[in-house]
Length: 429
Image 1 (cartoon, rainbow, N blue to C red):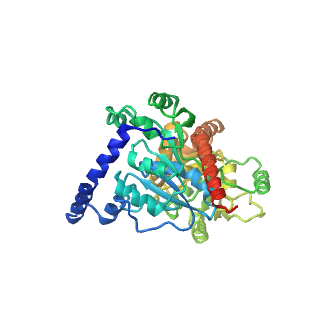
Image 2: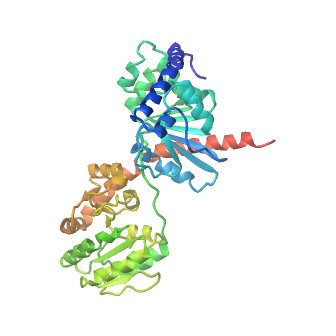
Image 3: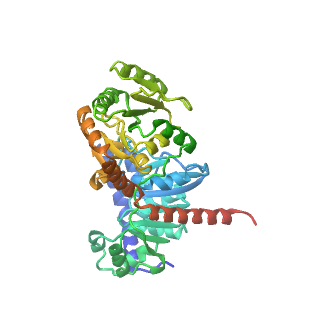
């Protein structure tokens, strides 16, 4: 039951009084060219898009980067064609860089008129809240609408709580709007308890962070190929871009002088690009072969080229070291957790903006190494091909990849329960 709070009531009344002035200020900002109309509409709870007839899971994160933490949750539900995702953040995305499955828009401002418009338009079936920004009007309305809400990575910052110092019961009332409060740490849980967070709703599970489920592969084919290699040293370049082929070929040529029998496996997403890459590498006097299922590997082959996504997991599983493509050219890089989940040490270039937060976490933990050109790649490869060094990096990467698994699993469990309950309620007796 939601606790009564004079602070919540006072906040709501003040927001109601102020909302006409806020609406007028937004209109003036549009007229002066200071604010784009699309963003102004979203701040007022409007959207050009609408929900379909599917179950809607609303995922809220403070920033676009933090939204990536929902990756595993989305992966769990994305095969269900009856699930739709609404994403909200507290920052704008004017360049449309947000690429997650679903609809993205800015969170509305915390005024009753805007909040009502937003909730009536979207009618979410469940909410996962990943922000320490306090939105009392919005969360109170969510609670009154009987929409189950999960507060993940929960903590109380002094900056936020200081605003409500004169209303001691405010935070208690606000927190009671959530069905589950998943504290990010023991220390965060202590502060939440001091604020009178409902203990029956409070759990300590750690940080929700992006990870990935390991790619699947054919174990029979992996075993067959491993026996063909017969302990031959290999490294793998995943999602290689056309502009990286020459650098990869030069690195293979340099390092193979020191590592006898070294094989480079290059994976490209596109078959046509793979055929072009074969010609480029052959011009560097390298012996190249296109991978075909159940075909023998010629002993003299320097580079094996694979394309498509079918065997990607197998190559990560076989190779102790991988280079993640799209990162020596400005393509944004590839998902590093594909490699981390299957035990491959990671090398990459500087252009990793698509997965920047994930790469930074891996670099900080020693689970990845950055290179800027073919020569640096060669030097890093020589060092990383050492079994001890590869195992050390792979273990560090796996720990980062698996961090947050417990809270992700708990959120998924809760959502499954909420949606199943909703389905049963909606089923005629």
